[in-house]
Length: 278
Ligand code: GLP
Image (cartoon, rainbow, N blue to C red):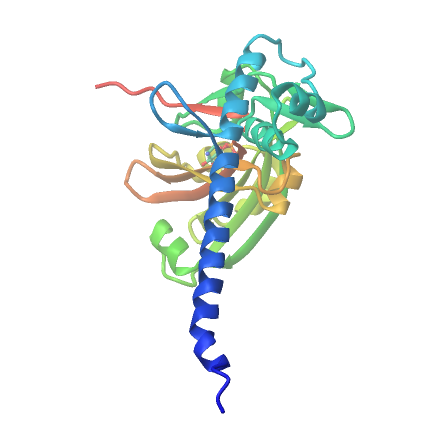
């Protein structure tokens, strides 16, 4: 005789129940996440993550302090602002990345010095530093003769695999590392360039004095990237911190390409200024 007990019949019911429980749990998690992430709607009506409200609060505080002032610790801010340490850390991290605060290992977080304004001109790094009242210096990190990739060849108007010089230099102002600069030039056009650069720090000076070449036109691009461990170490910053990369493709009076250069600058320390007129 049948007892009416058929486990097979219950399977769909159990599955539906389990799915409902999962859906409920998922909604609860989403609600919690929303609660954690969105704290407020600002005056413009935009929803603001919690950390961003903390960041705005910290920006107001920074504006009242002089560069070099010590900021309250993460622990103090967590208690004062009644929020989590993760939220405070995220806000502080962004302000460090933007160059408003600096972290000193084992000492604390301080209000940063104002950024250095660096005009964009078709002058050499050496001349530009002098015009701004700084003294420039250069460390030759790497200088090799190598075959041009297709991209470099197209930039320099030479055949792919033709010889180029790849010159990597650390540029410093008043002894502080400012940029890591990698320049590509045609080896056939500028024979012996590396030897000259070992004696004279300014590339543009060598180009003018030895090869009678002056860049008169250039296209300059600016993009962002995260610092690789190498750039970070050379520029005294953290891996992953924001960098500004300037790409310069310069040409002589005859329209021939002179150099293709990319220069990595710390995004938290410099502001590039281009004067535009109509
Ligand atoms: C700037 C430019 C580079 C150029 C360099 C020359 O840094 N971005 O494209 O090669 O100046 O500077 P210097 O003559 O001091 O080597």
